[in-house]
Image 1 (tube, one colour):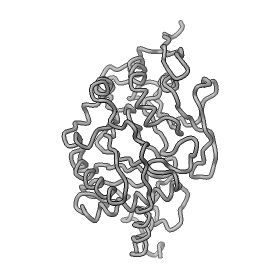
Image 2: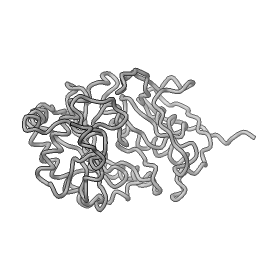
Image 3: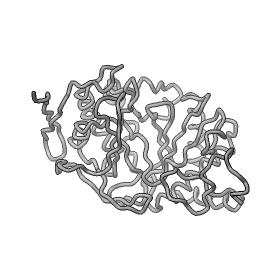
Image 4: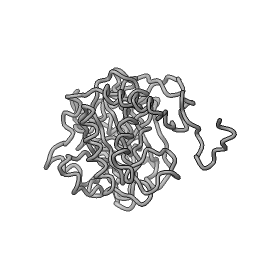
Length: 342
């Protein structure tokens, strides 16, 4: 017996496209009862602001063949048989390997990704026309044990002021979970490692101002009950859920842009696949024109050099990176044998 299949008409820049959707009644979020068809209708509804924030850049797809309760995997390369409107660009990964990576440029491509069982969309910080130089500086404020979203809010406001002092304007969104994501549009004049160093400089300055509330400690055993400023999300091929991306969490929450004025009163659990389209219709997109006025990371890089001169060196990289110059030991501090790390 043939599996159920429907066809969706998806408007786009080249006119309407017909996109097939198999198993449209498969329930992807069991607790919320949200189906694959409902997810497809959601991405069509938010496709404009979604593409403004995430389009025309390398994209990794987090795919769930059954539901969020089942297994998942990441898909980076365009699969065989992908339609012509699903684009690709060759990128260089941390290993030095080069390979084509997916690029979404129109609404039909997002629906195609849903047909491929994508739930979470992970865009790079760079555009397809120049994949090596980011167009945004990203910082993830990650609540650690004993902290939550409400603890990340004052840290976000304080970090906004730090970034303003460095000549950058930050935009903010919920992570779709407990954290807060802050993005600053920047001119693509520096490669990923430089931008990561700029993020570290900002994070260290915030840590100096809020030592009891935030931390740059990579190792969880050192963080305590503080918000972790995740500087490694600024690295090459390191991604977080994009603006308006659903999350694979029970209530189908969405990583949602908000204004600074509303951040204090935000309930991140209220932004879901079922509520965000109406929010956009009522209030518009808080990130409209996000890339229109990029800043520069020069001041933050001066702070980075200042901290180096004061004895603050490189911070740990994620385990999938090659060993990097000046990097401290990739081992938990409590397990370091000083005799082996002279």
